Image (cartoon, rainbow, N blue to C red; front, top):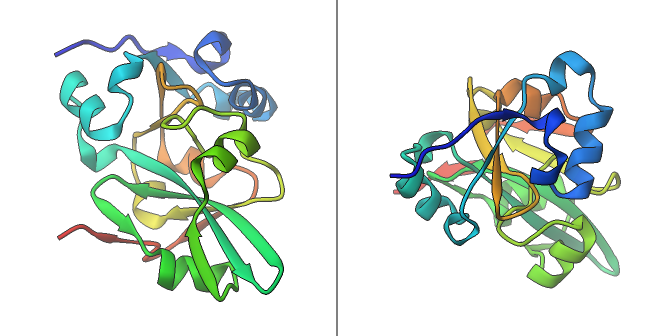
Length: 180
């Protein structure tokens, strides 16, 4: 098992995608100070591999999934944050929240291009300002959550309440369902 070295995210922009660093810089200093970053092996960035290699729990690991909802010619995009132990309710809750006829995961190349983040590292900090940010209530309630840092070579560690306080964040009960 590899070890993690936790560093203040505000002091280590080299471990963050540019939009993530910019988003953290815009937060109140006391909020930004609660966000830590740790370098990780990019080959182990996927949630299950990361948790196994670094001795972290899937119960505090949250995945940021980009969803697009369409109604006619209108497309709405949301970044959805759900625990790794749950499955995002794309066709139910997310679709209704986006007021869409159809909701699907955004194509990888589009998500990467629009966020300016790496696939496997997309995080709610620094998403485009016109996107909604939907957080499963279980993520918002965590004392310490693990999310991407915008790059595959790092992870952020922060309280769920910090995620819930992000601009445009909406905490949603039942956004995701436990994986059975």
